[in-house]
Image 1 (spheres, rainbow, N blue to C red):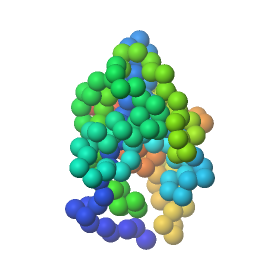
Image 2 (image 1 turned 120 degrees about the horizontal axis):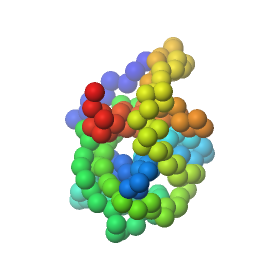
Image 3 (image 1 turned 120 degrees about the vertical axis):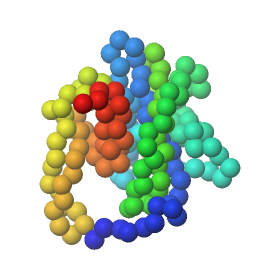
Length: 172
């Protein structure tokens, strides 16, 4: 059964969608540790819950610094994507897009991230990476739209945000 929470009462969170590299750009993703209680092993953008009196952009930057050692310089915020309500976790997620001309020296920095994944923009723009799989969830079979990146499957809220970014980069 699907959760019917009210988005107006959701907790606030922010993620940072990092686009890096000038010649062969890529998007920075993370693989969450498999031993975490929430979203174990999922592919996501660095981000997390907003702390009190913190601007959402500051949440995204703080979390990216904590999770992937994002440097404080050399990264420019270039825009925002549409906030997305995630009913299972009761979060309204605010995605911010950042750009770095250089490939960044990133490292998983805490107990949340097992791996940093760089997905080439060319690969993400290739329609063959997008597919629908049928998974058992919520007491039945559901269609899950995802990006198939070989060893990694990007689905859920992360895939939705990634789809919006791709539509902005490469409109129909």
